[in-house]
Length: 456
Image (cartoon, rainbow, N blue to C red; front, side, top):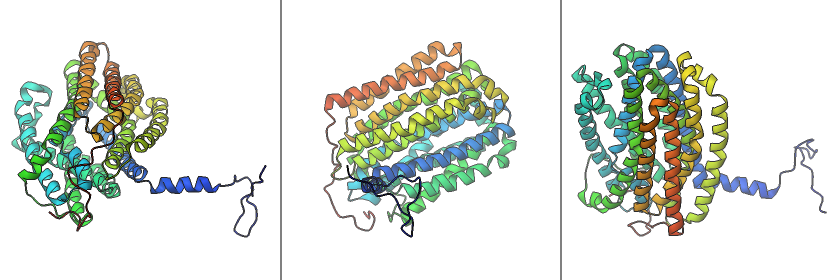
């Protein structure tokens, strides 16, 4: 048996009680620190954690400043605006992550994507304002003033651009820039807004969050130009748009199906159970979504790394699965254990009615993690039909359960969420098994040397 040399201090003295550090452990730690998948995941999770922390404080502040009925209506409007912003992306966020790393026209592709998203967001959110009185009468305060309607459209467009620019940072492995913008700047602005808009009722809550997103979107565009050296400008290239149209539309259809339950569930809760249960639902979902955010972040990093030239998808998939499992399981246990005390921070009515709902949503994060991992693998391998079918299953299963059982209790929204994600992940997993985890498509452009940060 080979003796192990005990660890020593600065003068060669043995350090008592400290286990020896093996060269292999040091090498593994150094390799992890250099792994782009782990680095991007770390910065994305840190961004999410800071944003989530700010959001948590934001909703505590809002719950104390505004009545629960206003919080319920505003939460439904914020959910709608957020998801309308996602709809406005037209799949271009996925397209940028998939193609920018190997593109010879990085500035042109980014500029075209931003311009398209701004126009789409204005049209889609404007249409939502028009149909609100019929589709969601509880949100008709949008028509209380023309400024409310215009403000909703502008702020929804800002949120959409902010989502799109996140994908640019991920594609360039520059998630640390996104940490500064969305984790730092946006969080600070968001926490300062509620007091300024307290006299505007539910629209004031929406405006407080929307202004923060618009500020972050502006800062992101500046960072893309100055830090990444990608010369974006207001322009549109039909050639660029057409060359990515097939992948963008498939991603858009798949992503839109994935978002339908998130936009429909809060409205169904509001219309079926009323504004106070809607507020409880929203708070419980937001807290549980903090757990989901880790798997989303690691999935985005998986997508970015799998899209790089020469990527070996098998090892990337295994490392990302281990990372998702290692982060999600402890987070689920922690949130379930602290559900009651956390909800009491928002007020006694949230703790009384929301603990079971929060627990169910949080346990469902395990299904969300599996579905997220499998879905990003489908995306990076361009299995577009399987992506669409998987998300169609999510919509059908989730809405059938919610519509059939929601009047039996708010916790059924969480059950529908978890079961829908589990079914969707199973379909995505079958797609991966069927394909044999083929290597990712290497993009439309040959490998090239990047010059000047993507000038067109």
